[in-house]
Image (tube, helix red, strand yellow):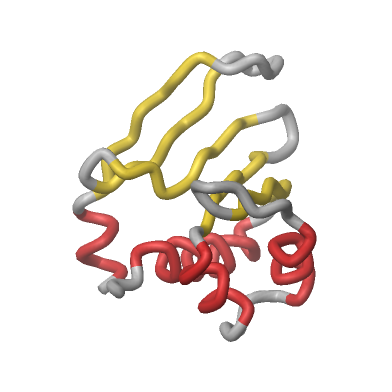
Length: 106
């Protein structure tokens, strides 16, 4: 599933108000899966999960800190959004799991 997901991703760079000036959108069929904003020492990841995916995230093996961020996030019509810094490759499995949850079929 992950291999299929990665092969169908589109990468788009958009202007940003950060010091780097650009944000990377990872999209699948025009649906934005997550946002990556580079900084000097790290990358900020932003992701929004709808209520169904939010429930899946809370029931998953995601780190407790990520679950807490989602629980504390204000729910909007498009879902609950969080941002968190990534400074090492050890965070990649968490990002991958979040994307898998987001694209899980209904």
